[in-house]
Length: 208
Image (cartoon, rainbow, N blue to C red; front, side):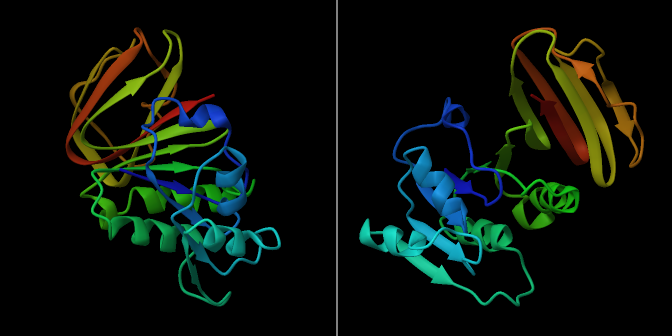
């Protein structure tokens, strides 16, 4: 498992709930500041460091971590570079902490990025201040409280063979097409729910 800390809004300490200690941490640019603020040791800091605090990269190196610098003019965001670096470690799961800087275009770009086929071989979850998003390929288990909202959105094409357990409005071997609102505002009926998809990719979004 690898934790990737994005730039933008710093993660809350509560976002570490349920995560094992001593996980390798990759920080994207100002994600260094967010990681250090909640007590995470950064193993790799990556990016152009245009938004990190002064001395952030140096603090990583002083603590034994590695810094990988990139020019501001590049073809990928700092978060994408961080995710690619995390994949090099061959994790079975990546948890992304932090935010998208409060910009709607950044939020959309991050959501589509995490659902990219590039990361099809790893479980991915993002924990933001405003929502938790789980990428569903095959099967995923969601947790929360009864009554919590869960929205299921297909990306990159239709999602077929969707089955759910633990949601108030179940789906039984059904299909969701891109652009549909049918999966919006479902509700947890228990503390966990199981969502599976035969073909395609779903974003399971749990607003906070």
